[in-house]
Image (cartoon, rainbow, N blue to C red):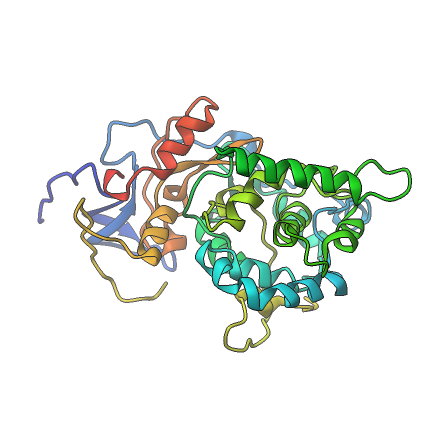
Length: 364
């Protein structure tokens, strides 16, 4: 048997000759295998074990039909005709900027209506394990990866943190104007503008902050939805909006999650986002390639993004930090599955978590 020395510490994928079991017929062979790090087999780290509660075959939701009639997905919204018009009106002027900051396809995706299948969503959710951020099925684990969010939703996994502050007086002044507009656009006894009020106040008015207002509504109403932003435009997105409007890319994908299931998709025209394949629906066998990455390698965006999808990290949201453990679901990336090793948490510190997520790929 050929013996391989331990892989260097700057690799994301570990290659070694190993006994592998076919998932189809259980046949065992010895071959060169590829695993996402960290693995417990080739390291001194403890095996990341599942809690017994996650392995129970008994469902904890016994009447999905009854429950689906009571549960509301308030953040799962259908686009209005007025919103679609606003996207159309802003498109030609800002397409290049949206592409630059990695939100172009995500904005186009906001025009589509994805039908809800509540019982199906709840049936999948009952398999979710909070400790691992994966779905635990009898045949193994699966999860929503950064690649899923990037490809299906069109969000960027590169750029600055969504918690990046506004560092100049000019940017702080823009935020102040948006906060002021949030009050001025409100109607009746409401203190803050509803999405409709916001569009009536800014849309098509050639206001100096119309683009910022457009992005704010998109982020508040369709991306970072909170209990209050369902009814009002949330000021929590204003700093992100201001960065994006000035051409500064922000990592939206790690902070935004959830996908539906996949029926037979629509065909799409050239230039349409991938999510158009699910508009109003009723319901990696690539060749192996080795890419050497070192401090002198200039990564293009696709390779850099894919490397982020494969690397364990912690994802920084507006109010939370979640572990991202792709080594638990290596087969989703077309690789082999080993025993996953534990990955130490950053103790809830967003700065440390962000530095770990955004560190150079060669330091993986």
